[in-house]
Length: 468
Image: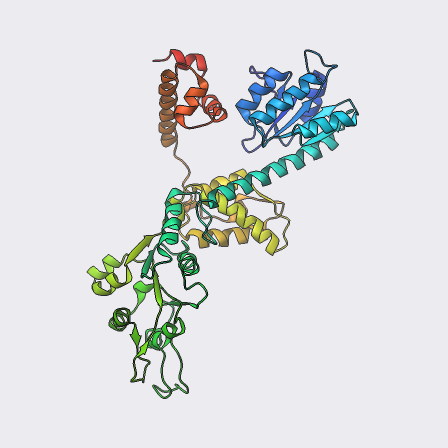
């Protein structure tokens, strides 16, 4: 037993907290070994239980209904349940009692208990109930997280909690209804085509064609005919009249991907189309009017290409009536881990694999990795990991991340962060005159989060109030 009254075995960082509220010392020792997969926190009465709940924020609690000062009565246990549900409504509480009364069970469930277990305790049976409770809690948290980070926009295929990316999504929604030319600028794999489709789907042209062409993927001698089409006999092999991508997009949206790779020889013709909204097919003589909304994308810095005289400045200004810069995944703090969990569910279902979770070590690697290939690379890594996983858990080895690309937090930076957090908590505590609730409010965090920070930084309330 540790000095703070917490029972622990070997502490493993990725073990979830399980709060066991039980006044019987022998039963506590028995349950400690039964719950080997969790970091078990014990409490013997209502007051200690609430203190531990606030400090550790456990996802699951087992609660003995017969608590001191009167273990033969269930009033204290039910009141403890009420307190837990009030403070942490998402916590799964499993009631444990020797009473087989159906009325008592119904009352406990109606107050918010997750489940009801009647003594004598079979550790293996109770462990199964606890495992299900943790799994359900995890699913609910992930669903809530996904709902929250998607609530700021309605862009299909974009999952983000990053303010930078949320701003991009809001910009897409604002400019989509307007018939202006958009330039999407971002690294490869950041989702430029997803946003281009969103611009189309949120516009009045949504029911018309969305035609995409990759300017870097088609040889220069074929690109002109792909864009503008050709008449029969225009060149050797032109056996019939063929419409180009621009004409096929009539009334809809034309997406020119990798516009920075458009050959210099074709740029004047594209510029003329953007100015006049008229085209001529190769071998044709009659101009054809085309009503199309143009969206472009590139991973190049077009201003540098202009300086290098490989991209026309006048074309750039025609294409960039509105420019939207898409941040790389490494700048979208927290997005990689959220997306990884979602991709795990998607690929596990697609490949019929029993993989259910990602190890803590793998999650930390996902968070620290720089993702040079952005979202596309994350999708490929997660697909591989789901296929290669040898258990229900994705490990670091399954991800096969290049070690030289993983940038863990350096110690000196951690020291700087810890020092800054200590100073911020000290200042807020002094300003609030030692009031924990007021301190948390000033810092913009919850009381449990503040308690966790104080424990991590080895700060006590008394020391904080008196430090200067």
